[in-house]
Amino acid sequence: MIRFEGVGKIYPNGYQGLIDINLEIQDGEFVGIIGTSGAGKSTLVRTINGLNDVTSGNLVVNGTDVAKLKGKELRKFRRKVGMIFQSYNLVPRITVLKNVLTAVVPEMSFFKVLFGIFSKEDKIKALEALDRMGILDKAYVRADQLSGGQQQRVSLARTLAQDSDIILADEPVSALDPVTAKEVMDDLKRINEELGRTILINIHHVELALAYASRIIAIKKGKIVYDGPSSEVTQKV
Ligand code: ADP
Ligand code: ADP
Image 1 (spheres, rainbow, N blue to C red):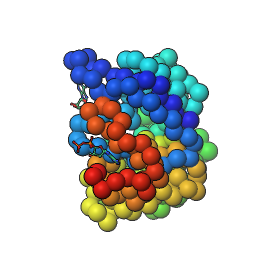
Image 2 (image 1 turned 60 degrees about the vertical axis):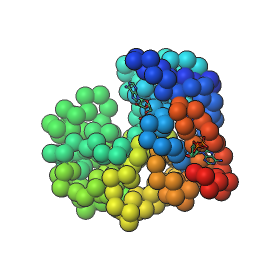
Image 3 (image 1 turned 180 degrees about the horizontal axis):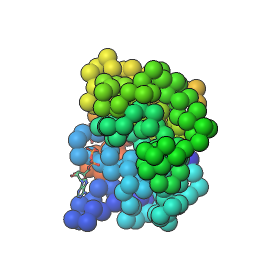
Image 4 (image 1 turned 135 degrees about the vertical axis):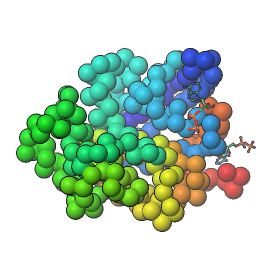
């Protein structure tokens, strides 16, 4: 569960990125966060895995006070709260399999994977995640040789391989053509329904948000202006 209690975020330059956010997100929800560019969607989502610190209030994720985490504990926590990005954030010049392995192998993962220091179980786990995302045949292809949609599936496979209960997605389909965007949204929906993972997705494309998310949170100037079922979102969006 994710719980925001009066959470505020002031950036070092004094800008109020989030103002008095109160929210509760249950396990297994599929939440779409909408709002115009600069509204605070990214700021909100990034606080959940500690990429952004909160400057007031309380944020509790899976029973953990995120503000108190640091070092090794924060890294461990981030595996359970996986994140995917608009730009995929894969390591371009290594294989797809190695990209997923870096999410599986604990501590010094990048170096260990590069030097082939990982167990058979780790490898099986990574391959299973790729299989689930329908891209097992790309396991030994360099990440930068895949299409955008395939790269986004690899980043999703990473979150599956590291057993994230919560998957945060920051504009995951914005760089994709409409058909591929829908396919990736279908993948997210499938992960949500079949594996019960909680999904929080920032998405400026309102129609896609309404079509896939069951709950919509609309943000404007760092404040929540709507939080409820997607079926009740009015035309003014
Ligand atoms: P969105 O994801 O809705 O487009 P963001 O969360 O990225 O919005 O940004 C919300 C607001 O916070 C914007 O006005 C942005 O300029 C500001 N902002 C984001 N990051 C920083 C930062 N590091 N320092 C100061 N202001 C920031
Ligand atoms: P404005 O009137 O300046 O357009 P609002 O505060 O009415 O601003 O809305 C800002 C944003 O918040 C909208 O673009 C929309 O994304 C969201 N929003 C506001 N009200 C609703 C609502 N009832 N249902 C869904 N989203 C809403």
